[in-house]
Length: 535
Image 1 (cartoon, one colour):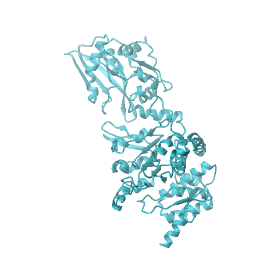
Image 2: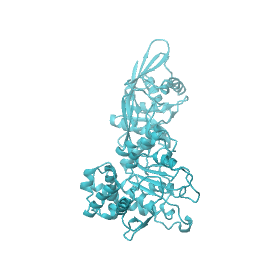
Image 3: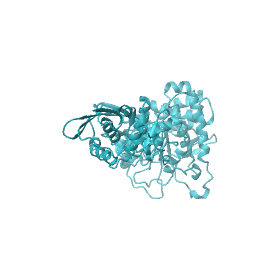
């Protein structure tokens, strides 16, 4: 006797359709699973046997062969228990094999026949819809699976209920309300931060144009506070982005702790994280922190303490917005379009910039600053050094501009950028190439002259040159200007500071035109040119 039931297997972020074939033959009772099963799938034999018997069904005392086809890739996870059990019941004639073949099934079975939640329900739901099949899933996953439009979902709590669904006598349970997933922290607001005006301005520009940001300063200066509040000024996820982000989270955690995400994710991995944990991979490849921060903020506190391999691995996702992992001659693509915010102290001991004397030697400082390579710094558009507040922060708490006010300006800038590139999945200024900049970010004559002079004086790379141009386009968008003016380029250049050990840090002052300058009030390019001529 023979039966064939559809199931799904996760390969990266993709759920592939797999058919569970079961054949019952004469011979000594034996249960074999073939088709390249993993260790969890091989252990399913005893779980399935006990679950079938404890659900009140007779387990066939025959030679049972279960095949997971196609058999050219490894099947992992415990979600194969339910399709294996129902395919055995179908082959034994207890349920209709024809009706069972019209359902995609997934779920882990306990010994008493209860159906437990598993990873990957949302990708499985999309695969079932594309195949024109219904979905039988654990009760805890039903709420998330029903967010997929055009799909018939039947949440079940036991194996017997799943058999009743196949027989057409049960329509599935009503899924319980799920908890809110881990997203950006609530209760944080820029209004809580007094001072730090240049850092707030950099956060606003970063959010408005999706520019990567680097914050430096002594401990307690407000770097972490700024980074955590950056997520509060990002507009909520669109419906398409919410499904995309939740799809990623569904592959790494069970659905009973997940609902459709509304706010943008905020991820803050520890600096001891491995390259695989940060970028993704492993024996059974899973997305890393950069993918879990997709469409949100990735905050790397103590950036200089991350391992060299992990930090250098950020080059590809910062440039292309994705991570490619190759396992067993198969390339898996994980999306990673995140907003990077890095923070680091001015020195390894953390005393520089405080009242305590720093004892770090020049050689130690060079090694510390050398941990962040030039190619990584070249991909970061904004760099701000945060100084400690001169007075107690509680003196004027609550008087600063709120996150809601900043978010309204960010939303207006995003609306302008979407109109410039309609239909683009990433229309923000940070994604502009040379063609986009020439046609969508025109420079005035004065702005172009200043940018060309900065290229020569500061020794900018080509990537940095276009990075300044992109930031200037964002500043102009925030001000409502169609053409990028000289003051937009001048402000953008102030965030392109040199990343080097601070021997004698320059003191910046704010001029009458609102542009920060150094020393004699001239713009940064003129000052650098004069200093070079004097030397």
